[in-house]
Amino acid sequence: MGSGSHAVVVGGSSGLGLAIGEALRARGSFVTNLARRTAPSSAADASHECDVTSTESVARAVAAARAHGPIDVLVYASGAAAMGRTLDVPEVDARRCFETTFWGLDRVVRAVLPEMTARRAGTVLVVSSLVALRAVPYQAYYAASKAAVARYIGCLAHEALPASIRVQALHVGFVDTGFLERGGWWGMEAPIVKGSGITPSDVARAAMALLDSAQDSMVLGWRERLIALGDRIAPTLYDRLLRLRAR
Image 1 (cartoon, rainbow, N blue to C red):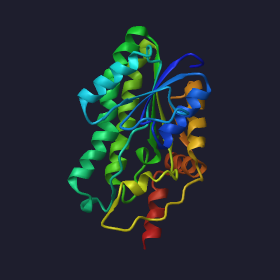
Image 2: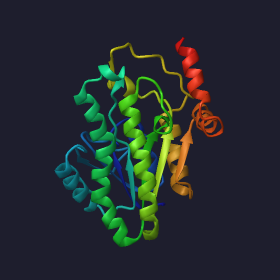
Image 3: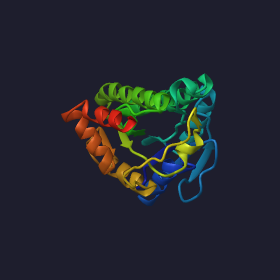
């Protein structure tokens, strides 16, 4: 993927999607943002309104994006948070989390992948989270939606391979974008979250590196990589540490 390619970023008007859009434009890609809000010119050459919870809205937005040329890269960076004590999270918020994070991705993939398959070219990159790989307290619905996305991407990658389409996941840890705070914390105060100091620019650079690689996925952040590695070596170790902290 290089200069002259057409990249569609879903959720490119703010946060991680905006940073990735800026990185793609810096590499010479024509970037189309699909989101509820218009992206700044630094992150997108064109913006089209898109509500990922609506199949009709996604279809209209993708059709508008195709007017700028065939879609070479699809980046899905849209998500919704539903945090707090599991039984205190309202069902409507839990469902909105899944509608945006999981079903929104599926709607966009259904709209974009057939064209990529016909052209036998294209890349789908999903911005995911460490919680897709392991359980953490007070993020049941968000983590479950991301875990569903991780399995979905894995299955889709196998199916898309014969058509020379790559499907990739970038699992990031805590990034201070205000995303968690906007999601609300039900039944508890928002905790102080310590990450690895990852910035949106770090995520954007990692996304570019992943797009240039043959990898299916990447975990970003030194703490996050240690947790992922620890889970492979000693699957119960992190859970034991969490239980000790809860005492």
